[in-house]
Length: 204
Image (tube, rainbow, N blue to C red):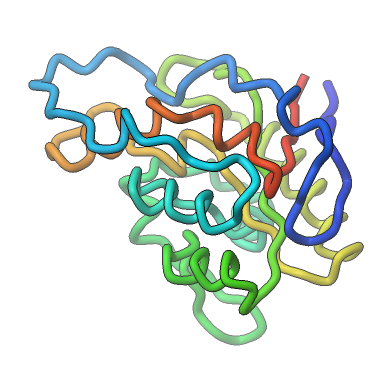
């Protein structure tokens, strides 16, 4: 198995072949949820596939959260599996002597889109190894953490990761807002892989 990158670009991750990226084989939903479906808010909205601000707006509208690569390093080193989005929201880790959140805030993404900070954004295309968890043995986690470390060293910038299990609300979604978020994300999921400001890691 190997991890392939869609493109290797400067920190904002623009790619000439972004429209040729592969979407994940699983949408991040481990089982069908027998819940009342609220009306998706962002389903009919169209987002520009070149503008960083449009990408940031999509993440905010659908409440998709990116994961700090440094948090993935922390998980891999401590031999802990990736958490669901619901649990990841409460996770923190220590880096350089200070606590950081596992997930990137929408405000941070908006600052990146406005050019106030740099970051490399990578979406992971992968299979789910079990119905309940895509990577129970942490094999994918280690591959992603290792590849992200290369980009951190090469670009001297933060790397933010989209991985469906931790970036999207998972089954069982008990709150209507979690269901709305998931369906809004699925309505425009191609943006995570086709936008010119992202790169794609493909785990084969």
